[in-house]
Image 1 (spheres, rainbow over the protein chains, first blue to last red):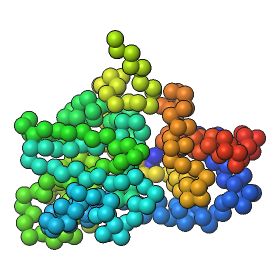
Image 2 (cartoon, each protein chain N blue to C red):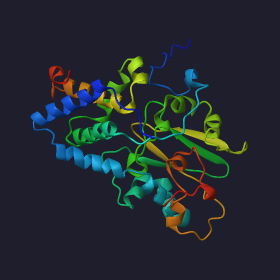
Image 3 (cartoon, rainbow over the protein chains, first blue to last red):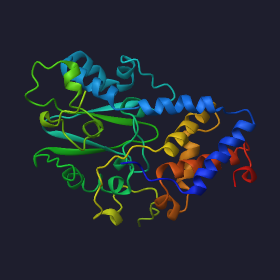
Image 4 (cartoon, rainbow over the protein chains, first blue to last red):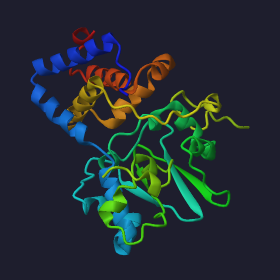
Length: 200
Length: 96
């Protein structure tokens, strides 16, 4: 399924804008192509690898919780020019859910592009008022005794969830554990599940 | 007395209007237009010709019918064009 196509007037606006910038020597088609190629590669893979390492390496787990930005740098990811990354540690008693009520703030460098639903008005409005109802739409049931803490990502600070490692994954490699994690698990709308292991 | 102003239209946290609107869990792939707008933003940002906050302000300044009616990247494009015009980098005549 593809995203909605833009109105013809907006396609025209984009090309006029690009044309004007090229005329002034500000922009080349090659520069655009290079950035577009980077877009095609964006994914939640780095975030998944960071969580998988935290599940297997207690020292890294501590560093990840203390300073997400520095932990990302251990994976060769620089957050220079981006807001800091905060990591929210789930436990049996506490589940985290991330939203950006004002727009679409999202730790792109580790999670790729914000998903369509993350940017939707319904998610932004309801995540803070009815988080359990929102989670139910993904089939995610958090036990009544578990507290849910909703955290607002902003232009100045971006958040990612460190979920609880699922049972039945004892002895798994970091690489295999990472296959349990995608954008939904790292934002907190879904829990990592063995039956839903994503393709590596 | 509570004199807190009403939230502006982009401030959606807890907005009761969407209380009964389901979140569609789909995540459609970006189309070529979306990717091209995104690429343009990255280039402009790296060249210091636009900041995230300037772009955000212009998105938030869109009238509600456009804020809720346009696609995500259509809004980005309109906001980027507005920033570049207000900085005097391009003129309205060139882009309209």
